Image 1 (cartoon, rainbow, N blue to C red):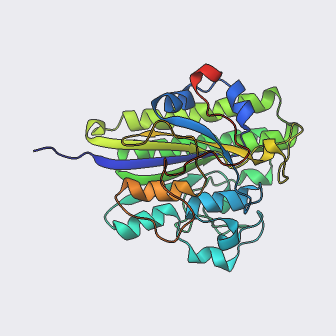
Image 2 (image 1 turned 90 degrees about the horizontal axis):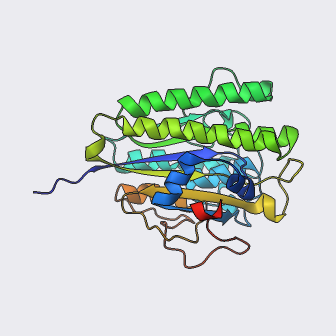
Length: 296
């Protein structure tokens, strides 16, 4: 008799990483995901501003800002409370499953500014890096998130997790998209390696099917900053690899992550704007070609 492997999924958010800057950086962990699955540019949907709050709310809930009503980073709309995040939806469908959220930007997981964006809430570093908003604070916070999440992934049976790193976005805001920005992207990729290594070290890894999705929310202007309509601000990206995922995906939307997470556990996502990966027929308007190792 064939025993089916248990599904697990990890979604990693890396804030504010421009697609062309990503292609210029050394990112071996993300390259591995691209080689095993896909990594494609994603045009931020016109219903969402090119701001963290609206886009991460779409990642969390599978609907765009005309429905969840998150339009910026400072206000938590009551409409958002009508939508469960994908970890909560997984637990509703499969109450026996465990999930995790670990993030350095506090509004994603606790009641702060526009948060909690993820209805399940989750773990944040004790010190809020936005209080200082400098490189050292965000590096320390992101490193703490990676350490915390890796420890839990390695030792606990987490079915669905969301882990977030914010350093690159802050570096672009503070200093633009130059060498320091590339270095910040590369440090985020090193943290991704830490998470992938934790998955590989799991005692029952051979009996588990893991899907890993990595996503950014928006791009940046050369001098730093976003929220506008330029191509570099509105071009984000999603990469994914795992059991059963299509490899030749050319079109995805941030809302699709919710649908894909639920599909991993055999659950249909109802009344959302997203679809499973591979269900969109063509790239979103303004998106460029997919990235492979040959593009670097």
